[in-house]
Amino acid sequence: MIIPMHEYPITQRIIEIAQEYALKNNAGEVKQINLVVGDYSGYVAGSIELYFEIIAEGSLCQNAGLTIERIKPKLKCNTCGKLFLRKPFSFQCPFCSGEGSPTESGQEFYIKSIEV
Image (cartoon, rainbow, N blue to C red; front, side):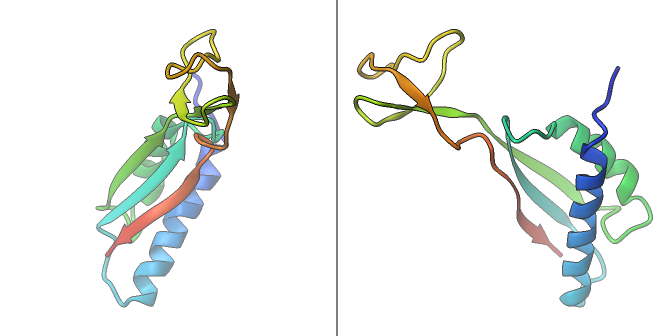
């Protein structure tokens, strides 16, 4: 099994941000970290989860839960303007049969919330 390596430093940074937040708020530990990860963000949610367990050990995040909300990419119809999920091998709008164009939906990557 090949595990992407670029998730390691971003996971490390997520833990650092959460620890900084906990210290700033005089909290003993981080209880929960909630992330938003788009499927086209370039990051693999499963790898972040794997690295989180390893990197968080011995930190203020070692007992924290990690929730990842995945965002699927959507197309925007050039005819009716509605957003829709793309079917394989098709850009056709399910509402009006117009052609869809890519949007930024699915490229999100951010910390939604940190609970201490």
